Image 1: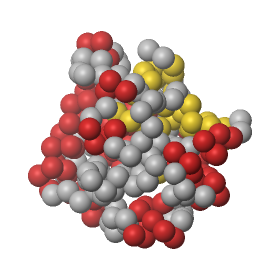
Image 2: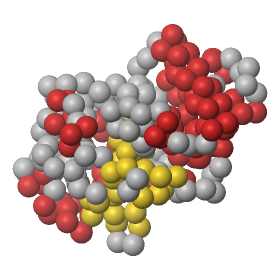
Image 3: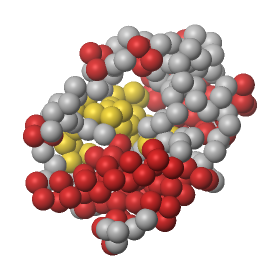
Length: 227
């Protein structure tokens, strides 16, 4: 493990800027703990898929007008990408049918039961990332937020079971990345992306964003998007 995170430090659900207390997986975890037999269509996760329908990257971030030219399924993070990744699609936590959502709710139930019984023990459930929650830090002055790359379900379950506890994470590494993740980006992964270094970020260096625009997008991960 490389460090530990607290509930208030988590800033995303996949690409979506979102504090964990507004995260529909987290909310669904709380619902299941209150009523284990809750129907899929009554969960916060199902409501999220019904209600969350951004059409463009601008709709997702709420800032930087030029992002209206790019669909919501286009990945773009200003500290990583030179420009939006149009050659692949990413629809995580967007545009899914009922069967997929039902499978996700059942996955959450299983994770709650497992972590409640055994604790969060990544080594007992290894995958290509060692069973770990993985990610990196965003930093703004003295503030920092943790961007979850993998383990969105695990991190939500853990904090729903004990919001005052910290949980271990591993830093994301290049060896874990898929071809989609390597497109239009710098080839290394930093442990911390600091706003003081925004001049060196790929999106600014490439000329796709101004420094002010890159900062505006990043700030959404610290402050949350007003709905």
